[in-house]
Amino acid sequence: MKKLIIVFIITALMLSLISCGKSNEVKTSANKEQNSSSDNSVKNDVQQDKDSEDSQVTSATPKDPQTTPKPLEDKNVEVLKQENIDIDGDKKTEKIEILKIKQDSEGSGENREYEGKLRITDDNGTEDLTFIKKQAGLAGVYSNIEYNDLDGDGVLDIFIEIPEVGSSFTMSYFFIYNPKTKSSYKFVEDNQYINLRNLADSFSFDYVGSGTLEIASSRFGYKGRLNISDGRQDTSEEMFLGYNRSWVEPVPIEMGADSRLMLVRTHEGKTEIKIPMCIFGLATADIIGEVDAYYTVDNSFKPVLKRLEIIDYGKDNKLNIIGNIKVN
Image (cartoon, rainbow, N blue to C red; front, side, top):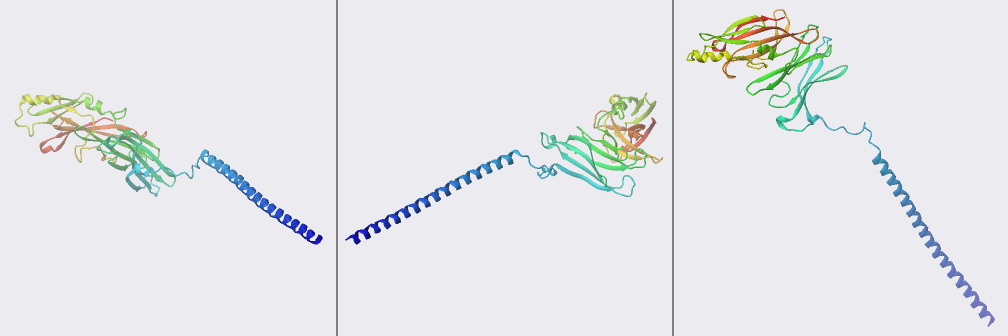
């Protein structure tokens, strides 16, 4: 009997020990899971804080300007002319470009403002010069470019024609540039060097009978006669008297291949800038002649009036020179 009691006690103790062991294993496992979950939570919080900090730094730090893509500007730039010319006589060509650049301003179509730019590229780099800013209109910013030694320094200067459209006629102005001295001059309106209004106002007209109109300038001591009878056989003397109100239009109007703003070569080998002005009779549709002003470019790279030619539109609109006035 005692043996049975002892066996029973031993068995009970063993069962108690086994139960405690399992309980400890469960607690240990639960603690491990809890600790693991806690660790992961801490790690996640730390990572989130780090990500948040990184995000704040990224948004607060400006991008490297060298790596930031530049806005595309080529869509606003149009190359109107490109050619290679040795303008300084060093046996190396310079790349000459005429650019039309659309300005970032309000307006569209003909009201959009454009910039005309001359670009010269050589071994030393690129040089940009704005020669005009204007609304596009119907004419554009450029119509022609020529190379000529205007001031006699041995270097080809650049001559750019700038077109303009008036109410009835096409007109041309100009920009000139000396690449050697970096000097330039622009004529787009009257100024101290070219004043077409003063020239035009110096001429007067007087009908002297028999279809003949006298043109005179007291400033230049000149008198000449225009034939206005051609094609007007049925015109009365009274109507001819209306030609006393004839006038010289003080703008460089383009009237034809030989009657336009252009460079001309003299017999002495010098280059002159020819600026034509119309002589209107009874109306702007009645062109009876022209006054052509010729300018040279001096050492300061400014135009100087040298002479005037008076042209009569004779029979069949043949151009007859009836006056050649030397000024300087």
